[in-house]
Length: 404
Ligand SMILES: *Cc1c(COP(=O)(O)O)cnc(C)c1O
Image (cartoon, rainbow, N blue to C red):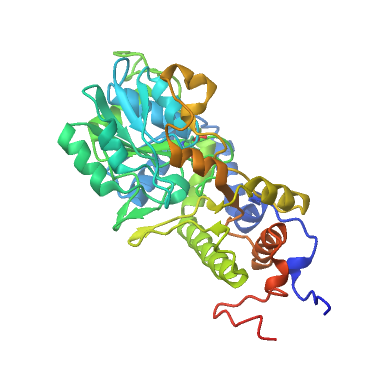
């Protein structure tokens, strides 16, 4: 029997993990005009662009206030400092996240206390949080990993019971919702990153903070300018973490398209589900779980590869010029810089297992279906399953492609 290669999935066209140029093509004129506008004004620091972005982003996130800052990492740090967290205070968070989550806690002088994740969502386990609470606990910092909100209901209960505050690491989750409520207003304060690969990506580093607490908002706005309350009057020491006006201008353009882009990511996720089910890889690949009533915005589409075959699949895809990557290969409790916290291998088994199994696939809004077919086909090839289904033909009603 001859293999008939009917699909582009079998072509050798490289599949990038993310293609920022494809997005730029679609909004080139608006971005160029926004950049031009800032250059014409020569107003590069704060001003109307930043306050305009703050107003628009607060409206988008359904918060009373938003404060622009230099990065998502600084958003976390400003939130911690704004809430007076520091030496002697414990902040409970996930060990399966980007480094900055725990890095910010340490930079504030506080101590990160890790609580393991739930295997289905990769998000922090509320019961593990409850178990980690001590008299020194001052805040909980759930991370809405990959763009889906953590299970906030029991987290709220724990926070209330112990009188501690919630800081959301919503860096990957702009526009995600939890039972209809926006990420960023699910705690006292929400921290966002506009790193270029986030759903709302700047032309460089940028971030912002959301809160319904106006007093806290003005304190964080003051901390980002060295604690200057105006007229070089410093009542506390802050640092420089302003959002560049250029970045604000770029982000204001992009904010208008954000929901469209996130919906396209959600559609791509649905395509992957259709493709994977066609290839019948369920025994080796687990797809990311979408929790009912939560809007997942798919900053990442991370699958699990079982049977210790993740690295093999990764290498095979890369050899085939298919972009994929690992978020995150090492949980934070095992990072050398946190050795002082006493983390041990085996301490957070779900996080360690996830780190060994996850593989993030391309999911950006402009990703062509032919690329998605190539990704899934590539995974099937890597796992020695490509013959099982024959040539790839994918459509929404998923006809049985093996019938012929
Ligand atoms: C991106 C990210 C950050 C840090 O954001 P930067 O803008 O890169 O500083 C923090 N936490 C999480 C979960 C992130 O994904």
